[in-house]
Amino acid sequence: MNLAALPSVEIVSRDLAKESQLPKSLVTGFVKRQIESYRSRLLAGEPLQREDIVADLSSSLRAFENSRLRPVKNGTGILIHTNLGRAPLGQRAARSLYEVATNYCNIELDLETGKRGRRGSFLEESLAILLEAEAATVVNNCAAALVLTLRALIQEGRNEVIVSRGELVEIGGGFRIPDILETSGAKLVEVGATNKTHLADYEKAISERTALILKVHRSNFFLGGFTAEADVQELYQLAEANGIPLVEDLGSGAMMNTDELAPIEHEPRPQEQLARGIELVLFSGDKLLGGPQAGIIAGRQDLVARVKKEPFYRAVRPDKLILTAMQEVVIDYLTIKDDPTRLDLVPVLAMLHQSTEELGEKATRLREAHGGELAETTGATGGGTMPKSQFPSLALKTTEKPAIADLITRVEDGHHLTDPRTLIE
Ligand SMILES: *Cc1c(COP(=O)(O)O)cnc(C)c1O
Image 1: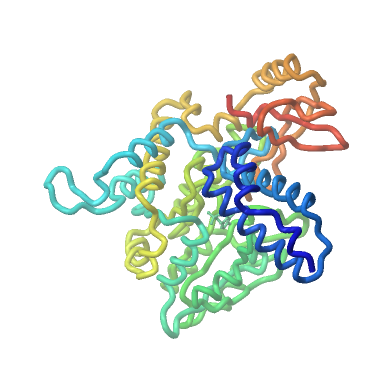
Image 2: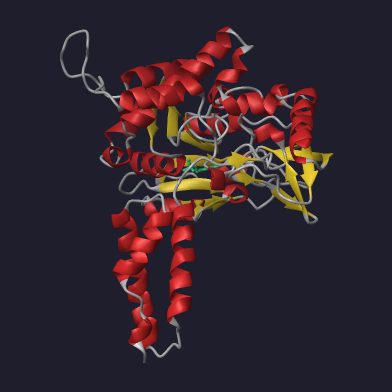
């Protein structure tokens, strides 16, 4: 045991702080914590040398600095990459964030009457209009939307939730439908088989203990081959006849027809599902919708009202920053509805819609600056959307990573592929 190998916190911190962008107190605190762990290792008998510890501290500090959240350049061609923060926000939404963040705002103040106002009322009204739904509300993410909806719609003695065996999905990040049901106090009633679920399977499972029927969009995988699922309209009639709500966790929330934007499959839109008979749809704000992290709940007025009355709603309601960003995204979509040429308002839509010519021009500019060759590749939407759909894209192929700060590339067969589709200029 040789504690003499431990360097002095003061000396090391002073030296490291000189090369660091971080406040000296943060560097010192970091070094102190690291040295504590070296102390334990020395006490445990590890033969550490002072020079090695000093060198390690310097590289650990660099790694720590690099872990600070900041913008990166997405050259992967994957539009909604959960590791890269999913959808980038449009300019208007981003500016509203800044304005609302640095000022006071009318979040719970009615400027007409000077009395207390209802939080999120503008957003809820506009969302309902966009979604052609009776009512809508917003929470922190789609996982929260599902937990909250389940909690609100189940009751003592009436807590069974019917789900098809083909829809018991795991989304990623530990989000598994059976677990979510359990945490929410619901009892899962599985029906059908993995590949086939018929209307009669749902019918047989309904009892006086049934709280709701839940459909879950298979957002990150697809079933092929010998498959069948109950028709949504028939499922609605069954649910309606038994007085049971029909809820669908859609995941992505595409507002536009994805098959019209790019050569990809059609992602079910919340509007369509509501029109078919789904009574409450749930979806994410930061997947194909292209907004901030949020979970949207929309559909029947009385069900949305029940969701908002559930005490847990208070724990998952979004703050003013999310409310303002989401509000501007909704306005962007309604603007696009008036003028379909304004896809530029929502970056994910514009990226998805880029033509091969546009990509070719961008890729050529990349090649002029960084060398390499152009290669045909495939892009993907990612983020748990359209697992079947890879679309043709064009990338710069290089042996070395192009010298662009914080560029994330795709590595295939020992080459770097930089897809300009997802690069923001
Ligand atoms: C992505 C996804 C979720 C989780 O959404 P978050 O907004 O990340 O909480 C839930 N359900 C489905 C079907 C999804 O695709």
